[in-house]
Image (cartoon, rainbow, N blue to C red; front, side):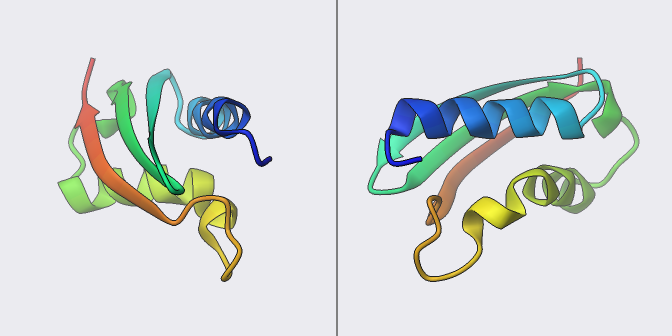
Amino acid sequence: MELTSDLSSEIKKRIEESIENSQAKVICGGNKHYSLTVVSDSFNGLTQVKQHQLVYAAIKDLMAGNDAPIHAIDQMNLQTS
């Protein structure tokens, strides 16, 4: 998964499959840094921390280890639909 467009698509896919009724937008900021916007009814009633945990759970293996394809999520914008 070296190409950023492929990885961006993979991140989007994993989030949308993991979080019910979600739509994700992934922007690569370069150097393995990403910004995310995720819209989902699943966020209703959840604290911001719990919302972030849902997103991180969907991509955790992409952030694990020294050679992980994702180094950081620079910005995470979460919204209910």
